[in-house]
Length: 223
Image (cartoon, rainbow, N blue to C red):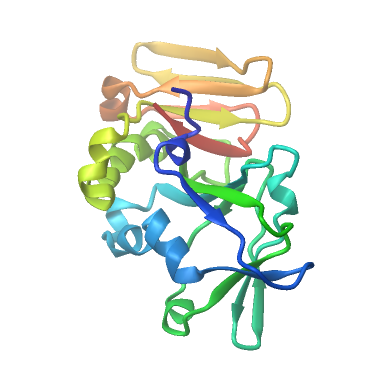
């Protein structure tokens, strides 16, 4: 099963739109999103157990004619309105907002009445701002992710595949050199400007320098 981490397809919830104004209406409580994506449990992990990992909510309209970019999500907390923009893949980076929980904030949408959204989560790796870093800096997100899933998902983690790789994404062709003790290893991106690296336990221990021709746009954790 292809994942981007496509856990969203495994832990999917179809959430109907609530009645309301045609242009914008109440959708779900912020607390509901937190519960489904397990943001609170992820946030409760010690920083050293999650500092390499990015947690995303993934919200994709069931109607394929509707782009996630058209979902028009806004968190409404009293008189405060905070947009929750989604990328083209339907992802929004999640950081627990305890004030929204305490205030029972609501998420509103501008999707047409009756349209549903599939909800789940994705995981990504934190990237340094430079084009050079040690192997474990990013690839260490894989064991950290697997350990976090076990603690956050509980028994549901039995249905989640073990993460084994990171997909680095670029907006143009890119090259990577890993400067190992045994010699340089060279890699190039594919036709989609993606470069997928499987975790190498030996390199994780050696922790050599990785040198990129360009900084990746993002790093997606995959199985």
